[in-house]
Length: 387
Image: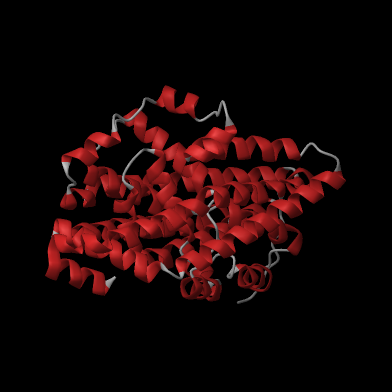
């Protein structure tokens, strides 16, 4: 990205010659994004077979996931609304006009249900794909054990394959993001730096608030000291920050839950893998920030009803986000596209995404562990551990 920035400052609009490289990178990401979200969501829902066995445990942890992720989306939207980072790089009028009016809440809810799922896939209507995946996954839970197990393995295999594809595509990120940075800086000049700086500050502030909320939940529902909790669970956050992968951190999360918090395997063995798929508070903050960053740059504003729709769709999309480094950026592009906003603007965030992803992943795994701790305590399933 640094070379792209320098090129944009030196050659200005002459950097349009490398614009096709940036567009190709975006197309590669979008090519894999919708099927990745679809199969990731199905793979996560297939784990709800265990939820029916656990009954109250499943209900409690799913309610926790839903509420805390909803708060995280709201934090991301609030931070971006207050700091307004996208206003530092207003786009040209034709782009803003192409975006069109933001539909009402009622229209968005209606349009979330596909009349033709094949058309939804081919047209990139991600919200319709997500709704179809949810309904399909829930329908699968009612099948006999043999076909249900077969489908679960198939969904997991497809999700793994698509994660691998995204990992390969992200290896070209330096070239693609460099080209995007060059053309964007060439068009907008140094103002882009202030815009990205405000975006980062907004996301970091929202992340700090969410971390404080998690600590407060531990104190309120478990009676544990937040500082003691953070000290005992520190190895998990170090792993998450280093790998930027909630999946890679899962083994450490298991160890911390059992040996440092005294949570039995029958609880964490269900809630932590499920949380890795369905609960992503850090990613939710980033999604809200990226969407409003792009909307502000395009000159699009959202009324209160539309912001509710934005939050709802963001909540749904976090469940389809892969737990791999850079995976949240892929979902962010899908999120932006769902509102017909210019994805090339959102892709610029890729240049600073690592600075965001460290906090995203740390909060994702922290949220899973806090939820597991609270639910286990409410069920009387926490052993006293001296650590």
